[in-house]
Image 1 (cartoon, helix red, strand yellow):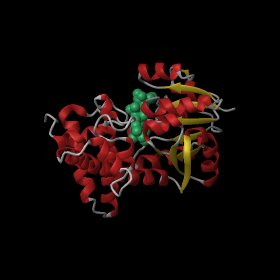
Image 2 (image 1 turned 90 degrees about the vertical axis):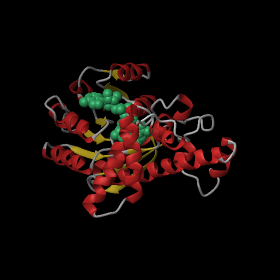
Image 3 (image 1 turned 120 degrees about the horizontal axis):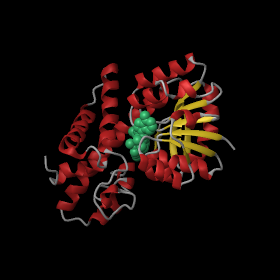
Image 4 (image 1 turned 135 degrees about the vertical axis):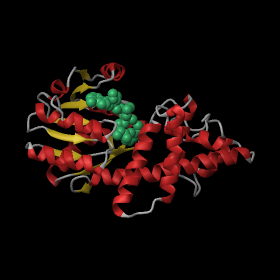
Length: 298
Ligand code: NAD
């Protein structure tokens, strides 16, 4: 069994690291947030007080952090992973970050003699808890294959995407589609309600019809229909509006670089921006339904 260093024990990393513990690995976990650390400790993660302690003697280090700036500081900072890990340690960043930051991490890791892969995930916290996430893994073929063996207890699918940063590219495009689907599902759900349809009956129809999507089946924004949905819980976050806004902005930036028009994506980004500007950055992203049903106070 392996020694795993884990940095970032939030909504996703908390469950993912617990699945490595359940698979028999020793996991040393670090996070800035004491509540996240305490929850991970209860799930069997050995919690430590620094990145240096998390990576000491590790066969593999996973990071699951909010944004590119966090991954850059955790890997490249004075107290960071590259400064403290042994070069024999495989490095896996599963955060969703911009391609430029991912390339900077690949370059810095290679220059310091490390094997590094970008390996973002899809599947939400329900997939993280169940160990059924899809991992998209970019990098050199050898490290990608090595990473797949460690990833297995957390994953339903492990898909090599090609060279450095291609995992992030796949993830950014996937999430563009996800958040457009979420906005579309919110509009359909509210309209169906106002046309007098029972919300469960409409969901039963859409989930076996051409309106189906992962957003509909996992994040349905009307309460009392889908057990995993944050709408049942006053939009307590499973995937924050802030991170959704970050992801769709990553797609918009990539689209600008490639001259790709994202008319729908840009409109959906404005919906998340309104949610963030109204003070709900920390709420679940499915709260964009409040822009459709008119319940958001702006
Ligand atoms: P989160 O905010 O719940 O967790 C991130 C954790 O990183 C927090 O606990 C935070 O304290 C910690 N952190 C930040 N900076 C740190 C540092 N310097 N050192 C140590 N810990 C630090 O976010 P999440 O929902 O778990 O998402 C993590 C990543 O996964 C994001 O990039 C997100 O876009 C992506 N993602 C999220 C979901 C989802 O459904 N929540 C699904 C797929 C991918």
